[in-house]
Length: 246
Image 1 (cartoon, rainbow, N blue to C red):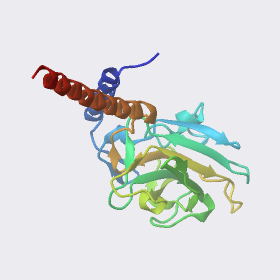
Image 2 (image 1 turned 180 degrees about the horizontal axis):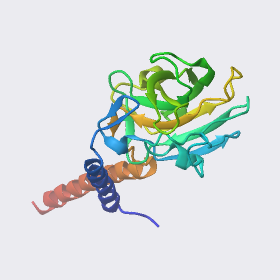
Image 3 (image 1 turned 45 degrees about the vertical axis):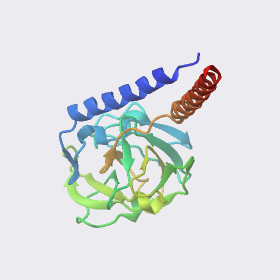
């Protein structure tokens, strides 16, 4: 079924309006692990799925395990997480649906991870994990990060503190002002005394509007070009008819 340019424009405008309304409703600033997210709950990831390998989503004995990777990594809840006991990587794709991550000044994305308490500011190489970003039609190579202790406990398990990796999109060749909405994580057992990183949540410090689906946007652009050409043809035809009657 073909959709008219007018209908596509209306859909895009409706999406923008819904995003604005949802953002306004959930825009109360939210503090997680010592980081402030001005967009509130909207700033956090909305969906996730396993791309390859295997991962688990049992975080600790004191919290109810997530039923899926998507449940574990959606929203700001840091009491559920994704991990991997194997040395072969489990690759998970995380998506932002009602917002995107914009490359601004400094850190753009915070990835929260759980580990045993360490002094604030201490990096934990045992929990190292990889990050890949979707931009310009493809995913980047993985870059690996050691999460850093915040000194803040989860509040549910005294043996687990919140750690964080601050991600600057400039490191992935994303230009300032551009946005991304899909992140891949390489989670594996680093064989350094812990099973792997325990990834709990992903939040956009610089949260922007959702990235529109490419196909409808292309159709809108082509439709506008076609309308412009038709108008030129009509003007040209009108001028010729006027010349004939004079």
